[in-house]
Length: 307
Image (cartoon, rainbow, N blue to C red; front, side):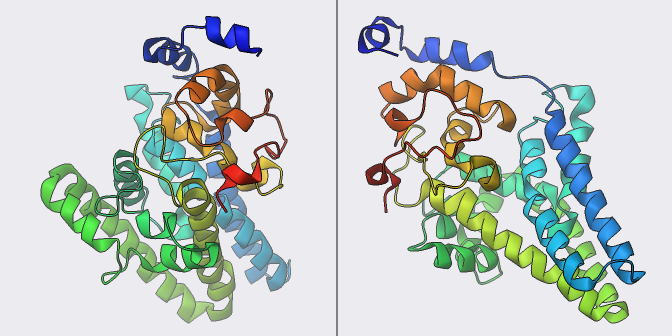
């Protein structure tokens, strides 16, 4: 858009929200397919490995792939994308979200509770449960912290305990989610007794690899070193890899700007909202290409990448 066209636009918050609402409210069928599909592939991998139809090393690689794709559908469910915000379909948000994160041995309810606090307090060291991997000093530290921050003695526990005291709904979600975590804990023990090597290579190690990957791509690269504030806490970034191989987290700023916009609609929304992003001085917004497809957003300058 030329400068004259930009200057003649209504760049008010009200106009921005009106444009954003045009991208909200649909059922994100892509995430439903990914959530159920990757879980089905994970279960099939167990069966094929145990029956000796495929080698364990091949199953290990499939398990890593499924684990790395397990969180995103749950994330969509956490924001109501799977139901499209329809009350009669909210069971899709919960059950597809929960089934999807089984390869991570996680609770959708617990992930939702902590993630919504992350949105409410992004980059706040006292209140953001994701702060200690989102603002790590390096990607390696982020990978380590995301696996340990939520432990009983981990640095995120202080924020979680604070929210549990102040917010009864948050506390109830932690209790409900904790039951799922315990179920998966005992399931892994039982499977480890029956199939020790298979459990190690098809569940335990893949979930650790995937968790590390998520800590880097979902938290560290979009948030590290930035301020608090809706238009300041998330950057556009690039690592020169096609964006879908990073779950499109290069454009994660769109999600923090309007969480109700579905993941697979964010590229179209960015194209429409780019002038508003520039007006709000969002980190890296002026370097976004006019069209976002499979490209890795390579036009974002290294200076704004923040490294």
